[in-house]
Image 1 (cartoon, helix red, strand yellow):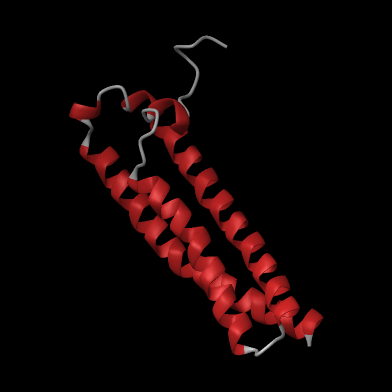
Image 2: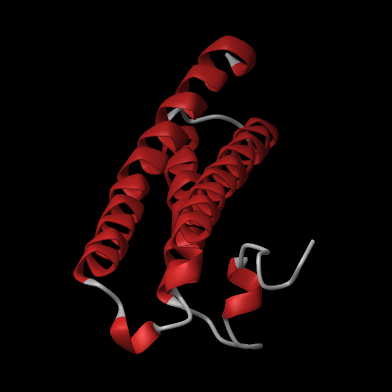
Length: 129
């Protein structure tokens, strides 16, 4: 594929060793799912082995949440690709798109927390109790 027609990827755009707001929101979505899974498991008053099993399930939910938010970000980036070379002259539409993406990433934190808590509760009810 020709390098000029190839769509940019997020890892190609950011500088080495740089952590962006998107990276922080991505990691937070996994952390919120894992934290809420811990709360659900701790509230069930399980033994240590069952708590560990519930946390492993919460970690799996967190990894899935991270994968979903990364895939969504890559999709938006591919559609914005041609405009990213002119970062100083981004159109209003592109700026609003970025605002919407960040807002939806923050909203995804609530969704991942909800999923982490309720999927862990269901896991505990079905398999550990």
